[in-house]
Each structure stands twice: as C-alpha cells, then as structure tokens.
Image (tube, rainbow, N blue to C red; front, side):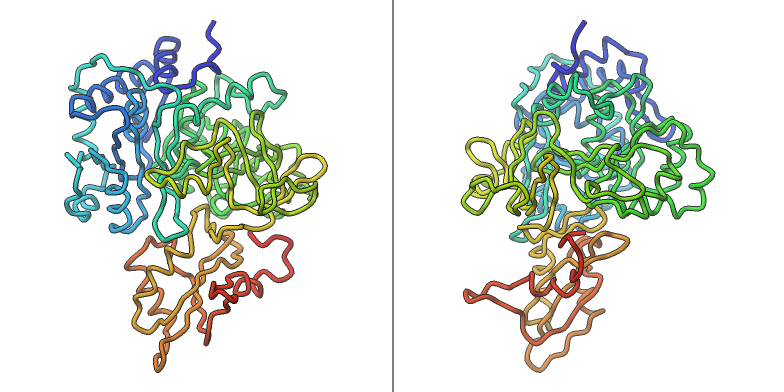
Length: 517
C-alpha cells in the first residue's frame, strides 16, 4: 500500500487519488461536484491545454477572480506540468492587479465568473497571449484531449503568491511542490490528532485563494484525498450552508470572520455537530471571543502561525492549550510543527537565551524558493543554509512555545490582510495638501489592527481627513485605505532622518502586553 505522505507533488497525488478513489468527491462549489477521477482527467487536460498554447515548465499563468473550483482545477493542472499559477487578490485596484500580471510575466490570464469587465479594465498587458473567461476556460478544458507531458519535479515551482512589499511594490514568493507537501512526511505518526485527517472529513475553503490561507487549505484537502468545499468568498450564510449541507469538519478563518459568524442571526440555528477543528491565524483570539466560539461551535481551536514565505503554517497552538478560563499559553503562537526549526536571534544572527526578545527565524521544507526576480530581497530574507527571517520579534519560553511580541517589519495585519505602510504612503504622497505621511497600525477590536495615516500639511494648506481617505481609495485596494487620519506638524525622525513609526504607534498601544493585535 502506498504511503501518501511519500507523495510530494501535485502530479503524484492526483494520479494516486484518481486511481484509488475515482468516485469520491474532490471539489464542490455551489451545485457542482468533481470526483477525483474527473479531477485527474481535467487537470491532465489543463496541462495539455497549456502546452498546446506554447507554455513550458517555469512559465506563469494568472488568475483574477474569487475562489472557484475552476481556479483549483487550473492550479492543479498547471502544477502537474510545472507551469506556475499566480492568483491575484480580487480586491486589488486595477493598477495593482495589472502590475502583478506584468511583473510575473503571465502568458495567459484566466478570469473567474463576473471578472470579465475587471480584466478589460486592465488594458493590454505585454506578454499575455490570451485572456480566458470562466466559461471559455471550462469549454477549452473539456475539448482538449489528454497528451503526454513531463511531470514537474518535487523541487519545481508551482505557485507564486504576492506579498505586500516594504518598498511599496509586492514581492512574488515562489513556492514548490516540496514546499506544499513535504512537511506531511514529518508529521506522519506523530501523536497529534489534529494533524490527522479521517476519511469522512470535508474542509471548507473560505479565505481568499490569493493568500496561502485560501489556496493552502484546498491543497491540504487534496493531499488527504478529501473534498474541498469552495465558497467564492467569506460570507456567513455561505459558511452555514456549507457546514450543514456538506458536512464540514474543519476550516480556517481569521478571528474577525469568526466574530461575524457569531453575530449572524443564523448562527444559533446551524448544526455544527460534525465540526472538529477551527483553525485561525493572523491574530490571537480574544479570550471572550474564544469562550463564545467554544459555546457555539463546540470544536477544537488551533491557532496557526506562519507567512507566505514559509508556505503558511509552521507553528500551532493546539486545542489542549485553549482554555476558556484563560492561560498564559494562549498568548503564544504555539510550538513548531514536526520538521520545523525555529530560533530567536539577535541582530548578528546569534541565538538569544530563553525569554529574551529577538527576531524569529525558521528553517524547514516549507521555506520558499525565493522572491521572483528579486535576488537581493531573497538574500535579505532567506539565508544560504535555508533560514527565513520572519520580520517578527518574539521570544521562546522554557517549554518551547513561541510568543510574538512585535513586528520588526512595519507590516499591518487587518482582518487577515497584510498591509505595508509604504504601499499606503505611496498612494497618499500625491495628495496636493500633504507634505509628508507615515502609516501605522493601531488596535481595532474587530479587525485586529486598523490602518491610520499621520499627515503633515504642506505650508499654507490644511489636510482634510475625508479627502485623504477618498484620494487613497482611488489608488489602492479598499482594505489598505486608512480608516483614520491624524494631522501633526512634523513627523518624528532619528538622527539619520528615518521616520520613527514606533513613536507614532506608542500612544495607541500603551498598556498592552503585545505591540501587535
């Protein structure tokens, strides 16, 4: 019998599950169901389609749309042949989406249902041979005959996810088959039931596919040969429908989304009896929210910590450490997964003692291949011996639990979306009344953190808060737009002129143990 933990590529897994369980459900969305036999055939046809269009291993295709069974079929099929999928956040402004398509050098662009107009708004993009609508893509896959192809190797790139950039432009983190599947081998046989999947489970894909928290959950289902139940975007009613009709046993959501579920009038009437585990990340769960969630859902809670550059989760806080009465460990991000090394280091790269704060660094098979066409940024983040600098400041306790104290980088996490100040600042700098601007994250009970802009007016001008927000909204995605604007006479700077964001942030975080929410 094959040990599926040894299967570490999309081609190997799809071939195996297509033979082993051809009639079992692989993907469902709305009223559509795709079995593993059908998915194996469809993904082979996707590979043939891409090769017939002149693409080869290492080329890129892009997806502009919400979550869809079509997206996963394209991703899996492209990955079988080593063609790299680049999903684009559907909330991005047209200029942001167009920049990513151009930067990755996409040869083909696939659009999800309802995104045909959004694609046209991008205008012509050099290098894109064709733009497929969802209907056109489905028809083309169906009529393309299977053809032989060379399967991608374990170390080959298959997925490129863009992360917000500290310099104002996002970076494409390139992930391989190995990144997505190899840790399963290390976890096999470990006494951790929450890492095991029973054969009657179903996983909900509710977070955006342009994030590792969306695509990664769909990949987890494939790895275990289980159904991935896909909803186009997070919406409480759609979640409740999936839980009751599809027998969902686990899902991943950010705490803000869990709060929205609880506040929805349908929540108390929904049958959550099959739900085993709720994974959450991007922020710790407030104690009162945990109490309400346990009472309502009755599931085990797992906090996950990771980043795009580590292909998602590298650290978990298991259900047994979630105490409705509260405990110290609930303030932690948990312990490293089997096969993951985590250290806390000083500025020179030396490991610091237990309890001392430093930068969190990690090494595992999850670590990305690098940033697309950015060798200097790759070298600054990924060492030659495989350690990724996370940009998070934290400490380890004597039991091996990791605590995140602050971010070395300036990134803001709002409702599970990553926002870098430089992106927002670039969008505001052209405002005629603004001389200088600094963007910070401030505490927010609903979203974890909220984006705030601190502006210095031009001499003789006054800055209107609503005007700055409207100006930014025309240029960047809505979740990046400041929720509030402060006006000050001058930005605090150090001797070399660098803006001291921590001084701007300090009053808002006073009295809090963490400097991140």
